[in-house]
Image 1: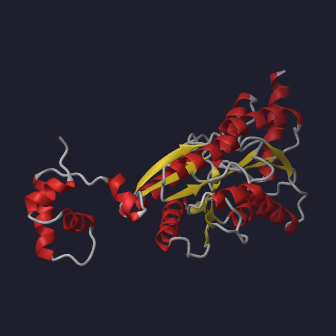
Image 2: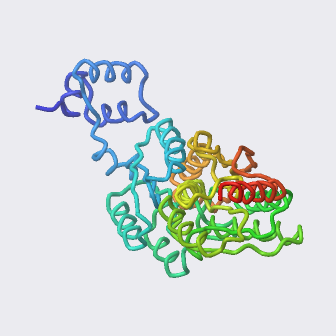
Image 3: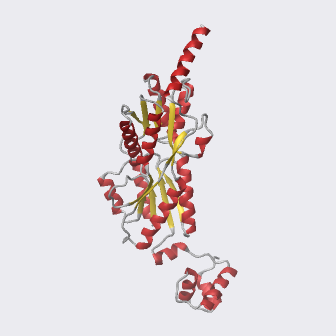
Amino acid sequence: MAVTLKDIARAAGVNASTASRCLSGFQGVNEGTRQRVMQVAAEMNYRLNRVARGLVTGRSHTLALLISDIRNPYFAEVARGAEDAAHASGCDLILCNSDFDGDKQMNYLRSLSEKRVDGILMNSVASLRREQLKQLIDLRIPIVLLNKPPVRTEFSTVLADNHEGGRLAGSYLAQLGHRTIAHFTGPKHHGNLTERLRGFSAALNSARVPPPLVFHGQNSFSGGYQLARRILADHTGITAIFAGNDAMAFGVGLAARELKIPIPERISLIGFDDVDLSQIVNPPLTTIQTPKYEIGQAAVETLLRHVRAGGSQPAEQRILSVKLVIRESCAPLAAKLTAARQADVGGMHED
């Protein structure tokens, strides 16, 4: 039989209410009594019933992280930061994956609310419309968004400076002399990705470079691969690609190898996120570094402030800085032209 609270109270010589206060860490209990109850609980191998405790305190000490694609290594680092912060605060973290499915996303939100989680961290599959925001409000549970642009909203947001990251990518490609540039990205209405495109386009415009050729697909490895297979066969003049995230860039890289388009000799490639794999792909990927672990950590800290405030905490917007990491997947346009001419000459000799 499991040891109950009444068993602990009887063995420690106190009533059940006092035993509960000692085990739950409430103030106003004699320290000697607390120590005696804690010692008895340890000796009897007592485990606090968190479900029962939650009915009294209104807290489950459980948080949830809802992401769009668990296969994207970006989310592994975000989840690690969130889990570490949750654990340090005495909370468990549930991980849910929406698979880019808006209906599945809403089903998870309703299910998590019914399970009485204390709060939810959410990376939405797309920008939330007004009616969707209302649905979130109606759940009456603290929610922190991980991909909401820094505009006035009912919910707190924690995200990287996506606009600045896009600007850095555009400025770098412009400096390398590229003029026919493509941007492979995800859905047309997606907070993080939309801001990256805006920053990218602004940088090209400032450098008097023609606007990018924008192609929308799924912001995943397979999405980048499918776009590259389709687009690069028809748009042979493209000399550089800015991918919406590293996962898409890896897909572009695979497609380029299959199409025998060398990177960076024929096409320069920039990603976004700087996941660990960016350093070991061939060639190592030039990308925008985002503070992934810190985003997860900061999001949990923000969420817990809302949980403890019980709805009185005003919405917060936290934007974390980014930087350009230059590796080997980009080259100046002049170098590409030279490589192309050499390839042509080599082909003539072979004939």
